[in-house]
Length: 396
Image (cartoon, rainbow, N blue to C red; front, side, top):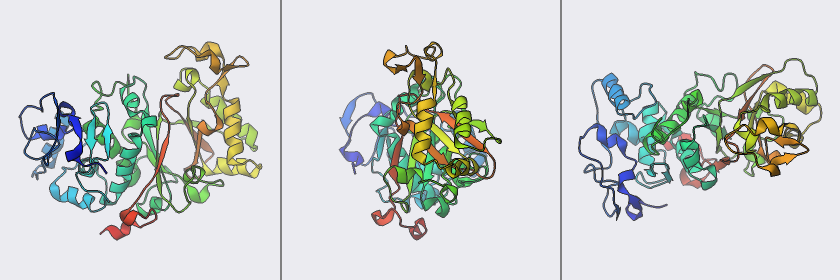
């Protein structure tokens, strides 16, 4: 793992904005240098300050006024709180796990822990956040484009494996709704890391025209117990007993309400009709499409004899619209995407990211991706001793 004293960085883009909260010293000079001490920047004697304030409301307001938050109250990131999170990492606190654009901030376990504390996470969520941060930094995810676009794309985080139960994540009723601490705070902590480390501040590094409520938090677990097919991480080559995190650039989910269809083809036609809309990024730049299918819808399709691959093939082949409508997007329609005078919104069946989540009710949610501008990344959540299946309960 790269250490901070081995990295050449633009010190004006150190990604340490929280320092400025407690000191009015100017930021680092805009020059490149080799860092050979125990700091990531020269703005303070230490990389970050931790403090105890008797008035949490004042701390929260100060952080908000300095644009370090998402607008919601935060928990002050004291040294004691941050250290509890660092007990769960397999890395050194100062290891650089990722470089996050546009500010090219250095994401270390310590900085991730600071933002996780602020978001209200439990310490056992630390390893999930670290792997999610590494995942969004992978080149094919194109975090720079995701952060900078005017499109209201957010980052959807999907958890698979035994860790869902260990950290109490919701994969069933209301998994996309308020109430669950893991779903709510893991997604929120990822966003705070993007704000404070990557510099994705609305109007500065994040240029989404209206933004999206999914940017507060868009995180859930797959309901593997009620999934009639193989779960997402197994489809992607991981063992059923491994835990993984998947990150996808996706719009806010849109409901597909079908209480009547009794056969797979009829139900999938409803989903396809909802998904094939002019104006989505996929319409003029085919790419990934997230399908969050309820267990009831999944059972209806499975009972009709359809496999997961059958579903992905059918959605891919039949999700298309006319070139006239498709050509109204943000870039000129590439003629190679026109087939039989139709434009498909996905490039292949593999672009259909199909997961089963939620509780009772005949609903499915669809989220358009970022066209061809980002590729989903799935990574194993490696815990202490490098065993993916090692319990977080052993981290005390």
